[in-house]
Image (tube, rainbow, N blue to C red; front, side):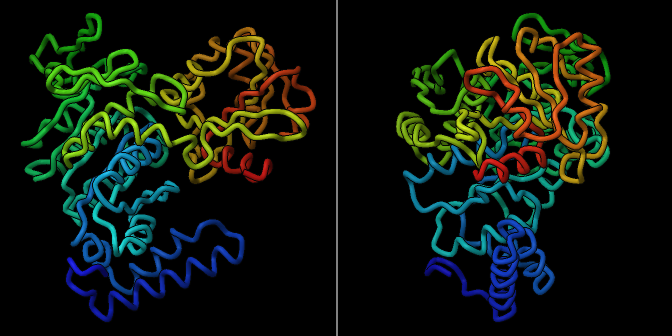
Length: 412
């Protein structure tokens, strides 16, 4: 460990060493990064290891249904201006993966940690974060996670009395209600494209009123707080009203919103918006997302979309028709085994695109596209879809394990 921390106990050192060994074996066997199995082994040997590893770090936690991996990467890039950063950059966002990441950060000043929504309260309890970024809450993996109102309540209870600065999206009523139990909140107007999970008031159950970008409950008075940071077009507005240009290599409005929240987090640690945003420009792709790869002499852009809100954002950034689109959906454990969410996605936004469908649940998706009156072809694999696709760059949209399958196939 670095000189500014207490030395780890012999038991903790043994746990770290054993975890790294387990991770190395997993990598050598070709079973992924090894971060999850390494963390599990380490925590088995020392159940308090996560808390011990976090003691010398300024910890920043990032949680949301969508955008947490990208935002974690942007914050880590921005905070690099103020000191060394350790992060779970590959998205292993449950306690085992987080423990693995921190075990490699003995010389770091900051830990920027993506946290699965379900584990936020527990990880916050263990790591004593200085800052927590909350971006959005929407339906996702309904077979595993609680519905959105219950998840917001879980956050609200976990954040009550927290000493952390909570950087929260003022445009998402569920996030606002969850964050409002915390005494120190910095509100960011980051926007909310997907509103279908926030029509009833999380505080009283009344119907939300949504005039323009504002929102409020007519029954109990719960309303949108006044933001101190805001996304405005291609700029971030800081608390002084200064506008700072956003230059990203990542596409879409959602990533500008992620950059706005990231700039607010960086400011908590003294990194000015101009410096933070300039550093964010370095990020070209995040764990394969947004990468353009060559496969069978064609350009494929790889896009991850795991739930209705994510698909809606992704449809907004693909090239216009007649750009070919490949859609791939699985329903394995990491995706959630319930595919009923497909019916909440507005696939009419793909009208005019040649569509090719693959993945474990391609027939579920085919039925949904049929009902949406879309023209599509069901394919056995990526190779067949690429062969059938008309000329031009191909947009490839997949949910979590389908995305990993595609990355392996294209050698990414």
